[in-house]
Every structure is written in structure tokens, then in C-alpha cells.
Image (cartoon, rainbow, N blue to C red; front, side):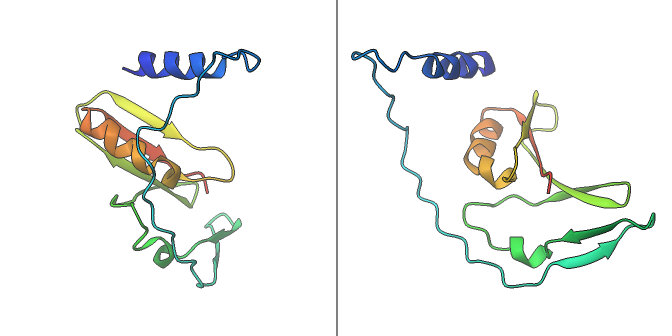
Length: 128
């Protein structure tokens, strides 16, 4: 399945823009996402045990996000907490979703459920 997805992406990205017969695929569905309400909480300024200062967005800012039914998990690395989502069957083939800057795993909110429903274990890390 992933090979088929990659092939579709490569074919779409390699289309010659000067080709008058080229067509652009229509989206499967229109997004129906609600707009998230901005969080007015102040960021938390914290310090690791090793003396490194860092800023954390309060957890309350992530509660009730539209189209986000996933419960965050956390891993601590060198005193810093990193969030991730782990969905789908525990014994399923793993798909790791990594976002770029300035995004986060919310970017994959539609893909997570589609891949998990197809039997994959989906892990989406946050690098904030």
C-alpha cells in the first residue's frame, strides 16, 4: 500500500506543467475541519535537571482540538517531554509520521485514522 501511495505522489509531482493534457486529481473529500480556538494561556518556562531552560505550551491548549480524538503519549528525553500519538493495532506494521517545521502531528489527523483503520500501527511524533 505504501509503495502505491509513493508511486501516486511521484507521478503527480513529476507531471510536466507545460503538458496541456495533464489533469490534476480532485481531492477525495473536502475538509470539514472546525477552526481551533486560540489558547490564551501563558507558556510555561521550565528548567531540566541539567539546568537547560525550555518553554512548554500548557496541556490545556491541546484539549478539545477539532478533529483530534487521539490521546497523547509522552516520552522523556534528557529531561524534556516529547508528545506522540500511537494508534492502530499493536501488532500492525508500523508507519512513522514525522512532520517538519513549523507543524506538529495535528497535520496528520486524517491520515492517522485512515492508516489505523487499514490495520497499520501509526506513530506520529511531535518535535515541538
